[in-house]
Length: 199
Image 1: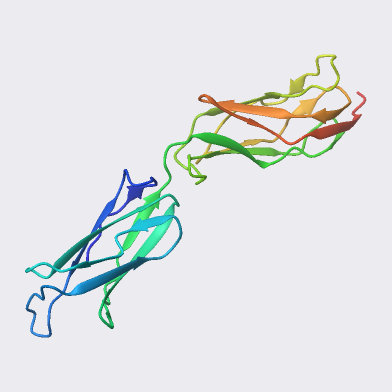
Image 2: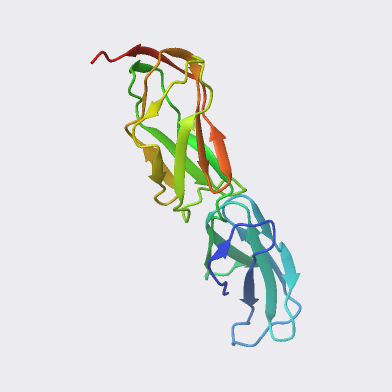
């Protein structure tokens, strides 16, 4: 049994073609045999079964919306074929940003590290994304024009951007942060700046 690898996560636009060859004990091709396929993991669309042709071949396809390694198993009657190839499903291109570490309530004006990650349209970590992620104040509860200090532009590494030195210079209840990159935007959960550091 053979299967090419890798493919990209999709709803069927990218498929792996799986070829199962059935032979008898003497190495002769067996036509008309029913082959049942299964795959590990979730989000899979897999040809469930088929019948071998005169050359003993049954061809199926696999696509998946969930990235990861999928192991293919073929069964002919009560016999499971020992060869179990794996298909690697890579994430699709980045389509959304998410705050994977939300901003916490702030003591002293300095935020704990905030992490933003890129995801593809199916929610897989878009590890191929290496663009710049920009951070700004989303909701400013002060109406005084609070300033977000620190490093506000970070290049993502394997789809992850970490903002480790952000600061806010005004007290306030209900701040949010807004991350943007390549047309993608994400808003954080609300947080509060409780105290400020006095120079």
